[in-house]
Image (cartoon, rainbow, N blue to C red; front, side):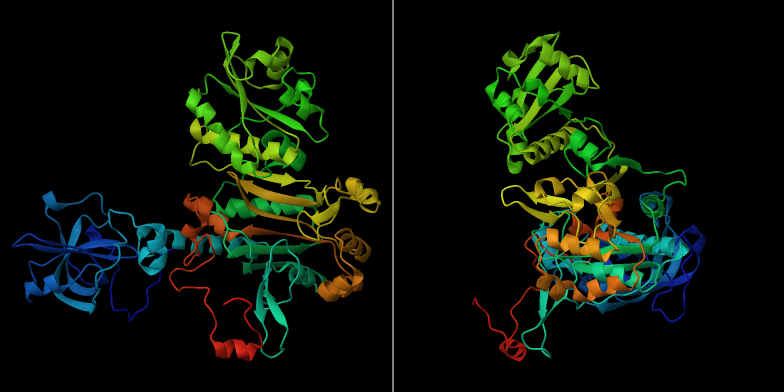
Length: 596
């Protein structure tokens, strides 16, 4: 990293992680927080801390009153001037970057006194998450979180530089915009100037970046804030940041190469790095998830056909059902084994996904035992091993249901559990996937309705165009899209699609999604009109900045990588947000609460 340029005028000459043996003899001024105070009778020491590190202050040369040091509290802000000296050999600390030296203080000043803090950001005892969020500014003093903020800043810089190098133009788009369906609820902002009307905070700049392509911007990007009022989890927040990209005249290969270039730059990977490609159908078959962790193998085995004539009626009924599915996972003995209590506990792994249980049996020295072993005849066992990449002794596990999605989800949960339980992957490794050929639609079989799998501007594949214009929704659901995701270690880092650039195709999409012409005009009139005036083929993608930094920081909580995050219930404990507006505000905006 380039050396940081210093400009004159700072209160300090150096930061607290900077001084080395080469600085011995210099008179310096340091500023920071009091991390520790040690009174050894004749010797006094203060460890002074800032963002960059810790420096030990000694007071043998101090001309002031040493009793004043006792008035300083932990986390008080101090400014100290003195001479850099070498520590005695017995006092050198190889565990500190500044452990060879100390500063003999000649003058020290209390800049800001700290009352007793609710917790010490560098303390040995970890505060509860709620307490750390309530006093986030204290938590942010910790080295871990400051390092993550720096990592995030560097990631943003790398992303920008990569796109600048490729000729992209950075363009800002509005935050106050029009409500459009993007798959989640909008956050609404009432307008004072236009009573009874609202803005929406953007879930993404989707239509705007497409309009920029119509407007001849050619290559656009933006590090943008997005807002979605949706259910939260560890890797999701109501407001988030994405690296938003749109480009004119691309091919699918171009978009994959662009994603590869971005990943290569952000993760500092070699020029030879390539992402493995896998279709949506393949990834669901093998892993039950469109964002699998492929740092380890343990692929699912489709076993539905093998149990159509089984004496085990639970499986034979599923196999006979249209849409029924049975998946198997084989754990060879060389990988490890599970105690009976561990096997019985697997029901808790699948229960959140609608699973009613996990069937199993054991093979040892060609003998079957336990679970459903009495229903497994030699031909079924042979067929299972024929489908498996692993042979020999081990445990077979099965997920079965009359709904495919439940089987996929349960088998995926089992696979992830086994990956952690048996330590099958290197926690420091990255495994990237380019997943392509997603379905264009989500189909609700009960209601007979179609929903956009990605968003309503995603282009159907050319080979499925005839099906796209057919009248049978149960078949239209099989239309594939020019859509793709970038996956790493079980997380979706980004995704995008080739866009619809033909007005007839776009109108058909709105029709299939059940929007009336009036609704289309109300929500998308400006965009539909823009498509009439010469629209280039275009495509885009967006990377989730928060998830990227999660991977780089090797943390599993998105709250770790956001300076001021919200809780799982979308509240800010520090600022007590959201809060009620005062009566004057609601009167001015012309609305009333339906709840107290």
